[in-house]
Image (cartoon, rainbow, N blue to C red; front, side, top):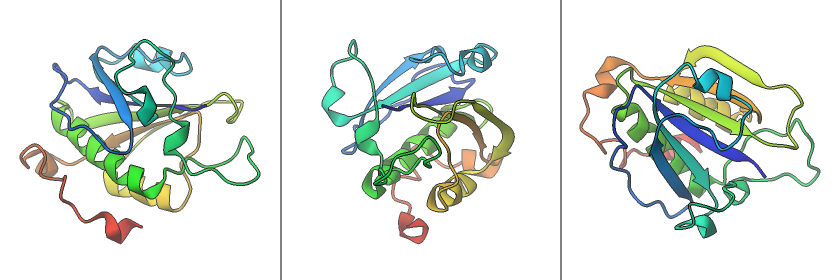
Amino acid sequence: MPSIEIVSIGALNVPELPKFDGFAYIAEPGVISHRGLFQDVLDKENGIIVHLANKEYEGDEEGGWFAGALMEWGENLSENDPVVFEQHRFQDVIVLLRRMIESSSRNEVIFLTDYQFGPKKRVINNKEISISEFIDFHQQRRLIYNSLYRIKETPSNKSKPPGAYDACDLRRYV
């Protein structure tokens, strides 16, 4: 089952995050992944990490944290299947990404996936993309497992009050 983690680069404190209907999460200081695929990259950063998981793991911070129930799976699974969230869960993921960007001193997050049945080689995408580009990649099925993405927003987005993005209309992205 896949692991999905989001790191708020340079954040000093765990931000105030809502409880989401579509998934559970653990937010903690430091950037220690539950899996080791990208730990060498994370070791060069500081901040807050959020581990996403199936809703049934909520409240069980000691158990295995997997996010397979958040995903839309194809009929014939292969290691090259794209990362595709179920749509109602994806909207919550975007809210979480925006909250994590708001808490970042660099206006930047790392989004990473680790899936034991995914591609054999990891991919580190060092080119920064915006939230809009991330949404486009998702909708175009261009996000891949065992990949790390750097998402950065402009300073003008940082000036919005916390939670200002929660009411955004994501229908234009579906």
